[in-house]
Length: 355
Image (cartoon, rainbow, N blue to C red; front, side, top):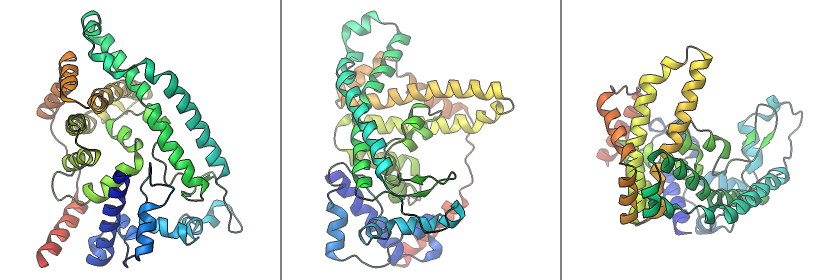
């Protein structure tokens, strides 16, 4: 609960600062949309922090969305945002969350079954077992690392999908209408399982895993950091998770791999877009590398302690660390233009100096 409350307090603080302490021209479009222009009452504040739907497992939501839900205008507001008349409706629809809730409850049931059957049979600790390390070739160890990482996922799928379903059942989480005219109840969704399992880049994986936490990190850190936003965001994520050393191994490794993956994509991807077979081959290779990179990165997160983490890294020869450093040293950096970010950061610095 404290982790979720931390997210909510900092989210509201940043959005209040955007609404009260900054000029509109200093804000991005998203910051302007979410800015809170008046201080909430004590009751509103405590309700936002401690509401029963998200107090245990989240997810964190934006203050304006939550207040709109409490005041009974959440669905109407989202329909207006997507211009429901252009979606083929001749009168204001009244979407029901029942279908979305039932679908998500089915996912939680499957995830629970997988957790009870797979997770205990494929423990992460086995990848550093001495007998396993002595008898298993390197590539087989990587394959088993992928298997045990997959086996560790169902508990997260279960908790986050159930939390999403609880909010939807209360009528919260409506996000609009898609291109086919289907009502969407994914405003508070914390993961996209299909995109996770088929991710062809480290960035794509991160964006679909713990989505609301990633959005929180982006809004309170990445979009506001004047320098090194990627590194600072990963460090903040580690601090938010807690004090176990494994968290810091994971997120510091994540910085390296994210930067290396970005460099490879910027320098190489365009060579594989000229034909369909090349694109398919590129996607297959990047999928395999992404999945292995994620497994390598998150293993310390599960192990938590220093000794098993170092033993694991030694057993796989620190290969992802070495490859990432080589990529960053050998490939030319091709940073995208961040004129908007630079202007925003300069405006922020000027605002701070003026105070």
